Structures are given as structure tokens and as C-alpha cells.
Image (cartoon, rainbow, N blue to C red; front, side):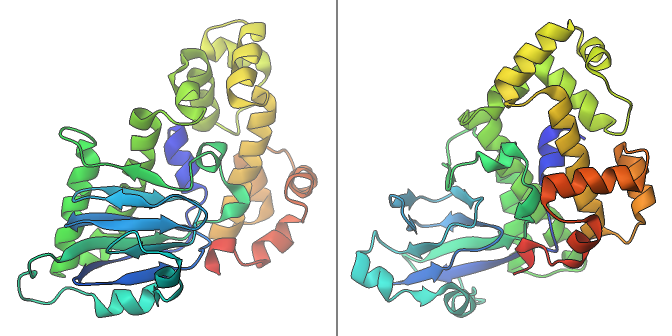
Length: 307
């Protein structure tokens, strides 16, 4: 897997949810802060996103917006003032009332795809941590072709539930999240991680670590895999990623262990072996240092995204 795929897979928890909503006239709905990530895609018409503590964002037809940190926000027909925002309808009630009917949409109606992802924020990859509170992907000619295709397919599945939709919809939602994050990384150029993934030396080292995290890596071996000297790898990796290659490897191994603890009933011995620790004791010691708790207690605690 590549870094973007691994970063998303490590924090995904449970099943995403979504719905297709059509509304008209004057409307204003509030989504409270959430432990996962939220998204809206404007299928038809236009509306406004009013994030807590942020500037209003105008959303046009075809625009997609991801709120990767679960920022509370209002979505409305206009850039409403504080008094209107204070009276906003709870999002779940508005969403239930606005599900599309069988008849064609009325003139001036706004149609959206709205949904949530459950994420375990205790182990966010730095690539996801540096995402801004609002990722606004505008509908531009020729931009984000994969994202456009996923939006179209998802909209069709949500409009008319057909055989296989129970599998198709969650899979398309997972694709949508990948495409939104990829679009920000590759085309929007925000944050440090686009530069990390564009650097051939650092990217080669990350690919090697993510492909075989349990391998007996040393700085010499990793530098050989990246095709550079030890000092060159250490300098470029540290400057771009913000930690040394071996420190990143330790963090990533423990993140993988945490994912396995919550997602499976695998014994600690198997997990330790698979992530590169010789004994369960060695893993437990490193795990407690990183997460502040033992693997057993971590496994028993609910993931933050379950709230």
C-alpha cells in the first residue's frame, strides 16, 4: 500500500454513512462537532457552508467539501447571520426531512450528498493531521476526474437502491474519501506532505517502510533501498517529515499494532511479530510509551470515532 492508502486505512472505524438530500426555500441546518470526518457534495444548485470559527464558504454545483477533523458547521441556503445560525435545525432532523421524493426537483432546489466517516483520532497519520479544517474542491473543467466519477456513481446508488447497494455504497464512500484526500495532496498542494511525496528519496524510503514495516530495517538498509547515502537520507527525510526515518518507523509500527488491536482479536504475540517486534513484552513497552496505556487496555477502550 502507498502512504495515502495506509494513512486512511489506519484510522477508518466502522461503516461510513451518507444520504442524498433535496431542499428548497429558506433552510439552515447545523452539524455538531464530530469525532470523524464529514463531507458534502452539491449535486444541483448552490448553498453555503459556515464552519465554526471559520469564514463562510460558497458551494456551487459540483463542488465537494471535506471536513476532515469533524469541525462543527452550519449548511444553509445563504450566508446566514448569527441569529439565524443559532436557530439552525439539527442536521439529522433536516437530513431526514430532506430526502428526495420520486418527483423531479422543483426549480431552485438544492440537492446534496451528505455523509460522515468514523475515524479513530488516537492514531492520525501526520498527512491527515495537517489537512485544513475545510477542504473545498471546486468543480472545475477537467479537475478531479476520479472524484467526479465516484460522486456520480454514489449519487445513482443513493437515488435508487438496487441489488448490491449494501456493498456498493460503503465501497464508493471509501473511494470518495481517498479521492478527496488525494485531490488535496496532489492538486491543491497544501501542507508539507505533497512535498514529502514528491521528493524521490523520501518517497522511496516511505514506500519501503510501508511495504514491509516488520523488516529488520536499519538506516543503512533504508538508505540503500532509497538509493542514497545515510547522511542524505537522514537529512532529507528529517527535514521533510519532521522526524528521523527510524523514529517514523517506530511510530508507524505502533500505529499498525493499535489498528490490529481494535480491529481484530489477534493475540499480542502475532501482532508483535507482524509489526516488527521480537516479543509481546517489547511491543507492550513501546506501545505504552507511545499511547500512554497498555495494549490490553487500549483494545478494551472504545475508539474516539465510536462516540
